[in-house]
Length: 162
Image (cartoon, rainbow, N blue to C red):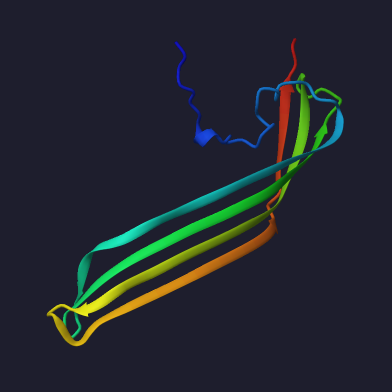
């Protein structure tokens, strides 16, 4: 009977792809190498948030009721390029193959956030001098950023068979 497939981190690897996977123990060719990894992801979120109850505003000479709805949405896309410069030593170190890696990152993130707030403000005691006042406010924020990430360096050693 087949079982349900399970994954950690929502199916996204904790490690950068190719570094600590199933082929990480395979001997490498001595010398310099350059690896590039392109990673792209996007996030979409939306939802309606309703203030379902009327709220009485205090510390104002007349009691006011507030009824409002808030709607918001978020969209973001990231395009990242990882560059890894690796040097693998030809001479064994502690009976194994040693290497040194330097990882750099360049990326671009494009995000937008939109929200709208609409509602009614009215006197709690039926009408009052103002009656009821409707209001609405909407706003959109867009952000586009391109940047370099920090450099990461590490050294590894693979054991060889005795």
